[in-house]
Length: 118
Image 1 (cartoon, helix red, strand yellow):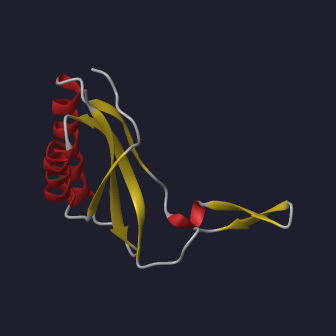
Image 2: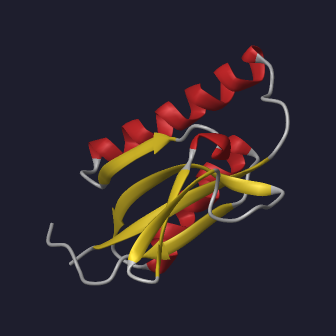
C-alpha cells in the first residue's frame, strides 16, 4: 500500500527570478515529474499565482465574509505543490529532497490521511 503525500513549495515574496534560472528549474522539475510518472507515483502538481490573487472565504456569525488577498501575511507563500504516492515517509522525503535541490526552495512534505492502493 502507498500513501499520498503533499509536497508544498514555499517561495519568498519578491521579484520572480530571471527566465534563464526559471528554465533550468522547470527542466529539473520536469525530469522529476517524468520519473514519478514512470513509476506510477505521480498524482498531480501545479504552480500557483501569487498570494495577491487569492480570495478568502471566512464564516462569521452565520454569514461568509469574502476578502481579497492571502489568508495570512508572511515573507513566504505557497507557490506550488505536487501530490505523489510513496511507500513511506522516507521515500516521500527523498522526493521532497529532490524538489528542494531543484528549486532551492523549502519543501514541506505531509501525508494525506488514509492509504492509496497501487
